[in-house]
Length: 365
Ligand SMILES: Nc1ncnc2c1ncn2[C@@H]1O[C@H](COP(=O)(O)OP(=O)(O)OP(=O)(O)O)[C@@H](O)[C@H]1O
Image (cartoon, rainbow, N blue to C red; front, top):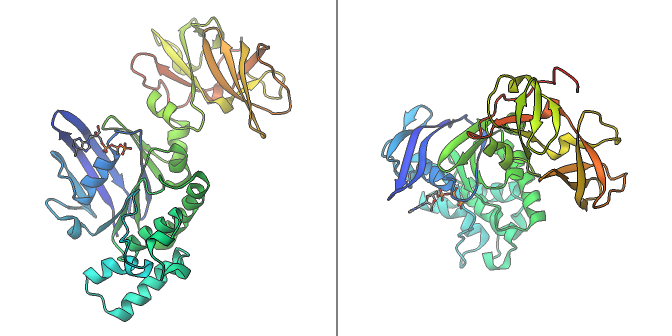
């Protein structure tokens, strides 16, 4: 059992507020990702959970009991870092066994547990090697093995895949989710890579400048971002933002375009931003209908299964994921169709989403 709750955590380093009123509830056995850019406060949050950093304000609870002044060892959590921190002079088997040696586990039991963990991580053939004889991915598995062998109540992982090459990262993502299902323990995983978070998490907490922006399933943060930061941080291609305002049930773009105003925009005075993901845009005449923006192709990036088009709409360049079947050329004029049922609206000044998901337009222009 290990439910981890943070309530109203604040932490400052001198005059820098690293965490501000951070509250999250991590369910027992879930794969919870703390996602945010560099400096957002992710590692500090993990260190507060581990007991390596004392919060100025707030409480950490494990299964409903306050961790108070409990030491890291008393909290019984295992940390895995991006640097593997293996003992270079010890074999893989000795490295994995090191937490058990510290707990005076007998040699037979120790060997059995090390072999079980090594089999699970598919490094059982490497047990007699030293870390210097291993690839980065294998070293990371040994570091995971050392955390797994003690069967802690929760695993805290701080960007453990950062040092691996892209292919290995993707492979290890799948390994970690398999491992999580197998051990059934709580994983709290820090990442600045939204794709990693989307692929692995049961739930994601998006952190920015020390504050939790949103907590939800990957689908919730992707489809219903609560503000512009979450909307643009989550997604492999950045969400397009177009400045506009609403007049008489029409969204009027600063760049001169007009679209039917989604209900959420009606009656909202002042400046807005229309947010549309590249996959919710298409080139007119390529199959999908919708309301169109007139533009000129600025750049073309073929990806094989899709073509990324940068299109100038007035002074704004937006990105469109287009079908690869039609050839597009720089300078070509075209109409970009907007799927308004998938569009988002933000208050220009506060960045807050007007509605969590805009409804289909009420009128057709
Ligand atoms: N011991 C410390 N002393 C002073 N400032 C610190 C300390 N630890 C963290 N900070 C500052 O607190 C802020 C949050 O740091 P933290 O390491 O938690 O961010 P992060 O989201 O994990 O970033 P990264 O992805 O770069 O590791 C940063 O501005 C950082 O410089």
